Amino acid sequence: MIESPPFWLYIVGFLLLLGPLVTVHEFGHYLMGRLFGVGVEAFSVGFGKEIAGFTDKRGTRWKLSALPLGGYCQFKGDMNPASMPDAAKVAAMSPAERDGSFHHAPLWQRSLIVLAGPLTNIVVALAIFASFNLAYGRVEAPPVVDRFAAGSAAEAAGLEAGDRIVALDGAPVSDFMAIRREVALYPGRAIELTVDREGDTVEIPVTVGEMIQRDTFGNESRVGVLGIYAVEPRMVPMGVGEAVGQAFVQSWQMAEMMAVGIGQIVTGDRSVQELGGPIKIAKFSGEQLSLGPQAFVWFAALISLNLAFINLLPIPALDGGHLAFYAAEAVRRKPIGARGQEVAFRAGVAVILALMVFVTINDLLSLPILGR
Image 1 (cartoon, helix red, strand yellow):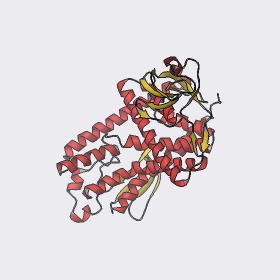
Image 2 (tube, helix red, strand yellow):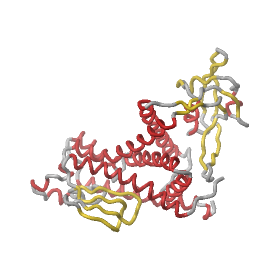
Image 3 (spheres, one colour):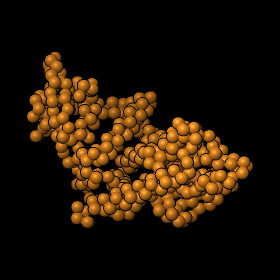
Image 4 (spheres, one colour):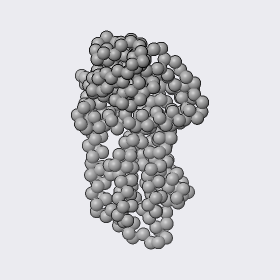
């Protein structure tokens, strides 16, 4: 096990990670807004009291704020950084003042402006994944059982060395890594493996085993395993087109894992202790930074995707909440009433704050200094 990094590295890692990712997210909103001629009143990295800033010639206040847990882009006509409309202010606007108001922009423009933030984070992740694919290639291993781990669930179920796994629950598989990804999120799940054994097709039901994985810093994660090893894998180089295509596949797989993980926490299949907040992000970012730039940049891609995923959840005050309102507006042919929006936004902010408190307490309890 590697010794924990010095405390200052956690702070540096957190700032190097979250600062740029939040900035590019908000800059996506900003650029799309500017493209459609929408006025931007404030662009902030962080929340709370302004530490430093300046006002540009367009009247936008660019600022660095005290709480480095996010950021915002406040458009003309917004009541607050969450882009909640100021109904009284919007209604009192003259025709001239409505020019450049976010809430007077066409619905499709507002939707694209909101969507631009998460999309920018996705583009960042795609660029990182594609760069790594181009530089290092991909791991390739045929789905053939070479040997078994001690206590292997697959061996107990009847798999044999030399078996080729051709399908998992009826879905064809052509690579060992695909099997590993599929079972990792489902410890204890009953699955059926279709195996090619010397030309014969054999159906083998298996209950996925469970293992607590520990990384070099002692961080634990609960994963599903079959207890099988592949033949020696090899690295296969990729061209530019394949590297970009594989980056899309990787991003989709990561998003699926996030969705499944959240679903399992909601249904009780996973512990809420697996949720992480700012403290855990700072811990992991410092650890990855201590391993070198490659590990840190890869981790940044994962967090960038995570930011996009979370922001697209249909919770009022998040980008996904705004998009849900716009979808309702498109169906109803008119916006949700000001009172309804206000109640929903306040409820959304309350949910987000409660979740932040919960995950922060969760993070603190997971620190070794507090006994866990």
